[in-house]
Amino acid sequence: MHYTFLRKTIAPVALRRVTVEGLENVPLHGPYLVAGNHQSYTDAVQVALPLVMHRDHKAWFLTTEHVWRMFSRFGGRRVLTWLGMIPVLGSNKAEALAPALQVLRDGGVIGIFPEGRRNKPSINPDWERVLLKGKTGAVRLALSVGCPIVPVGIVAPKGFTALQAIVNFLRHDQPAIVRFGKPLMFEKSDPSTFTHETLTSETVRLMRAIAELSGKEYRY
Image (cartoon, rainbow, N blue to C red; front, side, top):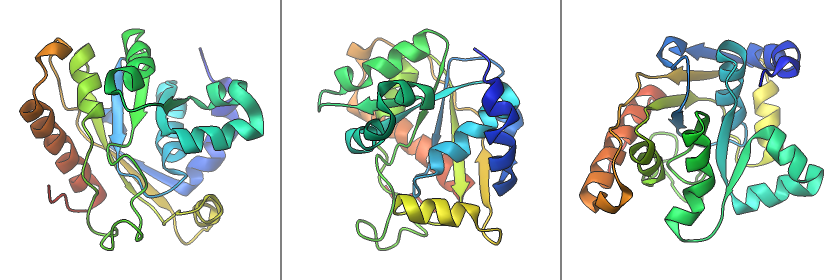
């Protein structure tokens, strides 16, 4: 599907507020994942719009149940689908990641924030310099399909609330930078063979790539 409306209206205007670097690192075709640091409600938009504009790729972003339900109150499931939001429901990892896994198997693109939530002072006093501990979901998906993960570093104003994120995004003196890094490659593996050591070490590799691109540290 081509996103003509986005490409001709929203994307060009919004991208005036975003400096995009390293787009040549993004694959020309799916499946692949994009995985970045997370501190603002606008992070997914800032990562998704360059993909729509320059690759004509729609990224489906994993989101928390809270955010998914908040958006569903405004527009219902049709709007959630149009926005490309996939809720992570339940504690069972395999079941929670199943919708995203199907998108990748169909040749699509998944966006994910391995920190699992927005990095903010209430949970990390050193949020401006240090990333939160990465979760293994991105690596699980990449290994299950055998597809690359493109690390992304987002350097942008804080957006701890939806209003703050929108206001800061629109301020001319605080543009955002989105850096796409070189893809990390993963060989397809049977999920039954995943070990804690492999998932942890590969997640550390991913998070260190994100840290370098975002100008932050990863201490785990």
